[in-house]
Length: 302
Ligand code: GUN
Image 1 (cartoon, rainbow, N blue to C red):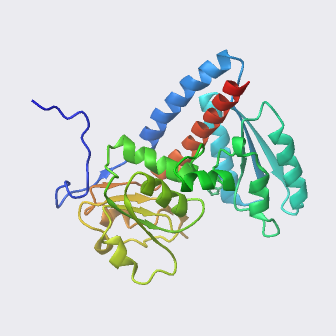
Image 2: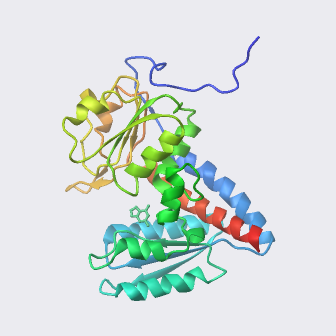
Image 3: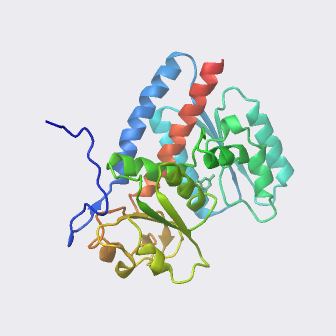
């Protein structure tokens, strides 16, 4: 008798007239953080406390919340984090000099520059100043290049979190039609590369795509990272599709919503991520994961 060790769910095997399973980002995050906590404990026993330096420039309210969440997650897992806050009018050279000092600091294993930076910054130059060994965001061109050839040390945190969520739910990626809506450097492009690496057939749509629905309707797995509330409506989604909503939008009434009409689409999809409580907790968690990995690499070299 054959026993299946792994059962995968695909859009085509999912039933019809279903209500989607809501993927709980907090539950997946808890599992990854527990693994990170164990790894951190054994590093600390060897005299290495994983350390993250976070650089934030200016007063962007959302960035401040994100940075506070990153610090909290580090503390929970046992990492040391330090925030370097600069005024909005700080010259680029000052921030780059701070990065170079952190590159040389043996107690700092990961460096993150919170984006967006004020308009006068040359973002590529600032991110390029971070040592690729400490680039836990995965935004340095060396790590971006690694992603392109399928051999990266630090995958960018948000798409890495999405990949973990798909793995957690045993959702098959190989051979599936994946449509990524949004072509940003932070989410859309790395997401597409990571899923292509797992042998999905990937299509990237963006703000200039004509007739978005003709693409989204083909998706077995639809990843939406466009920053537009209600961009994805039920008629744009294939029955049984897996729908991952990376959007975070604050509505005028104060509510936080994603890019997907959650109530409508959940009646058509097989899996869906909520906002809040879906991808968001995973982004922070994968940053912790990458920082622990950076510390492990450092300890192995020491
Ligand atoms: N701003 C929005 N998302 C991110 C992220 O993943 N990393 C950094 N550094 N800044 C961001």
